[in-house]
Image (cartoon, rainbow, N blue to C red):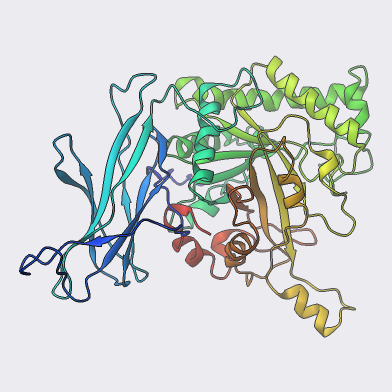
Length: 494
């Protein structure tokens, strides 16, 4: 008997970040017993407020992050909304943590909002009075809510016929970027009966979930198939707020072998429809488009229509897969053909992502391969944990030190045709679990702090085995992984 799949968590993902940009001056509410309203109780707290993000589509997850100073755990903090009559009404309440932070939920439903209207909610955070201090209130901030049918991305999707859902996903990602929010992502193995384990083993949700089209397709074809359960869970998690990101480890069309089989790698033959390799490849491609179409229509309307970020032919600047290190012009023509064939198949719920490998020894410069039309680009960066046997003690220490390489990231991000960036795969290679993902936050904070460089998310892989570099990769298996995620409320952190 197949194991029962864990039920998808039903939670409206709230959105937050640990980066607190400079905020307006806060104020403390005067002690009611003082003789003058400007006289404040000694030791009164101040409260900062940040909207995460400040713009949303009606019904999208959003939250408010309050910060009380001096930091005090266990302080009651409330979120208030100003009514039409000017009166402040409590809408949520939370308790501050050891850093003085309190995450408060915002209901963004806005019934009756016109197609071109923008609703505004003015919010503030108030820390309750204690024996040591008076009430303290933050400045108020305006949350802007757009109608579900009228999203406004900073840069529109490259597909001129993109679905409304794809357009709104682009707008949502732009809102993350505007708010300097970096999401935590977790890849799952869609060909495993325990595919949801990397997610369900966590105490906190992640806002970005990765899966592979080849693995999902395979799960429908087993003697005891479970693909429908995987598809349902992905759609359910997307309904509850997760962003879905699909890779495609395509079968080698020349040999029928796996994606790592480089005995055939004539990528140019895929552009000639008369070749058997092209016929095999495009038949496989159409099967994958049929899967994406099921996301597009919510699997026949059983779920909401769902957009997907798709990153085909990833890490092509490396020599790892059959499509690796191709001729630049051929690779870019193949990308264009893939986008055209997706449109011919009626698939328009996709944001197109170019993922490249860390620019290091044996890997080519990723810039020349960047396709002509993409919605975002992303770096795949793994940190080798096993030094070679001949390595000196100094080199061994350098290899085993936790780090996140970023070579090539800035160069790709600087291109005009790259409107957004992500860390599409990050983590260790050959780890025993001691690799700490806090290095991701440090690298982003030190090297990618500007808005133009800040990644939308950082995706960690699932645990694997059976090849050099295999080992512990998923958040729940890494030292400090769960703690790191918990430090990022709702899965957004730096």
